[in-house]
Image (cartoon, rainbow, N blue to C red):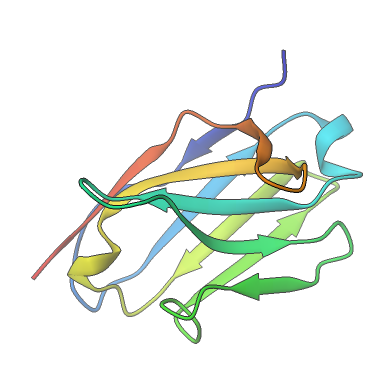
Length: 117
């Protein structure tokens, strides 16, 4: 069973920064696109950012210019650097891997990010 493990969530004031990390097996990191998704209470799940094995990234409009996704395939780790955080960024953030056309196949357990105003 593939395990993706997120870390780095927490409580931060608006305008602050956090870095999320996602660790997993090399079999996943070497060949698959990966992403960060988030879900806030009462809201639909949102794809925040995605990155190809080669490092090409895409972002949701809501986080462009503030968040940066990156991956270190040698360390089997993906990151999400979040700057200028806003209260509306409060959500559970999930690391995902292996896009299957309509959904991600692998999911982490999620890490809570709370931004206070």
